[in-house]
Length: 386
Image 1 (cartoon, rainbow, N blue to C red):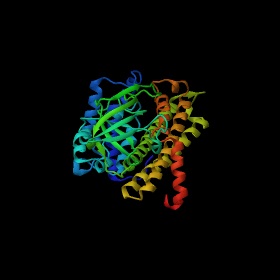
Image 2: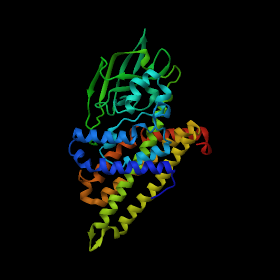
Image 3: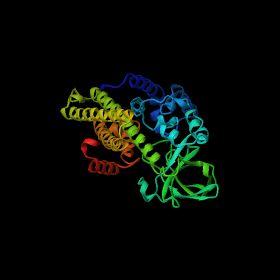
Image 4: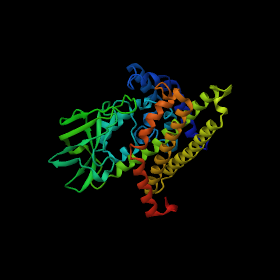
C-alpha cells in the first residue's frame, strides 16, 4: 500500500525496514519465550547497528551533531520498526528535539548527548497511582531547599526503569503553583522500587513503581525555566502519540501480510482459506482502515513539520493515537481469528501483537483521554481550526 511521501522519508523507510527484517524479526520468538530478553551479544549487536544507522540522532538538532529529520521521515522509520514484536526496537535511546529547547548546556552534556551516543538511557517518571497521566492532578512535589530541590512522590509504570540511567521526574512546585521536570540519576539516595509488576507483553523493558522519598538533587537539575510548566511534557506527549500511531501502522501492515500469507496457504474444503468471502471481508476491512490510518499519521507529521498552530497539532496527534491504536487492535483481533488455533500460540505474530497492541490504547493517555482532548479542542476552536 503506497502513499505519497517525500524522497527522504522513503529512503529512511527502506533503511528501517532492512534493519527490522535482518536484525530484529529473526529474534522475536526467542525473546517471547525468554521474558523479552535476548542474549547480551545480540542486544548489543542490534544497538550498535541502530547507532551506526543514525536512529538515535533522528530528532537531534544538527547544531548538536544530530540529523534533525522531518517528522515525516521519523514516522517512516518508526512505522517499519513497529512491525517487530517484543519491543526489540527499543534497543537504542531516542533524544527528542524538545530536550534541546528545555535543557541547559550542562544538562545536555551530562544526560542528553550521551543518549545520542548510546552511552545512557532515560525513563519517564510521570504517571501516578491516582491521577494516572492527568498532569493537572500530580501529587509528587519538589520543594526548594537552599541550592537543592527535595523530591517526594510515587511514580507508576516507569517504562524501561530497569534499564535506565536517569529519570525525567515530573513534580508540582507548591511554592510556585507550577509544575516542572527534573533530571534525577538512578543511584540518587532516597529512590526505591516498590513493585515490578508483570504485564501482558513480554518486554525486556520493565515498568516498575518507584518511591521518591526526600530525594535531594541540585537546583541545576531542574529542566526549563520558571513558568514553563507542562510545555515540555506536552511536547513529549505529542511526539510519543504520533510515533505510537506510526508503530501501530507498521504492526497492522505486518499482521495483514502474515494473515494473508497464511490464508493463501491454508486449504479448507480443497480451496485456499483466502477464497472464503468472510476472510476476504476481514482482510478488506483491515487494509482499508490501515490506508486511512497511514494517511492520517503522515498528514499529522507533515503538519508538525510545517510548524502549524501547536494547539491544533496537540489535538491532531491525539486523533492519530486514538484512531490508529484502535485500528491496530481491530486488525490484530481479525488476524488471530484468521489464524485460528495457531493465532493463539505465543510463537505466532498475531498472538503477540494481540497482547502488545492493547497497551497503545492506554499509555501516553488512554483513548478516553484522547477523546476529551479532541472534543475540547473542537468545542473551543471549531472544526475548521483543528
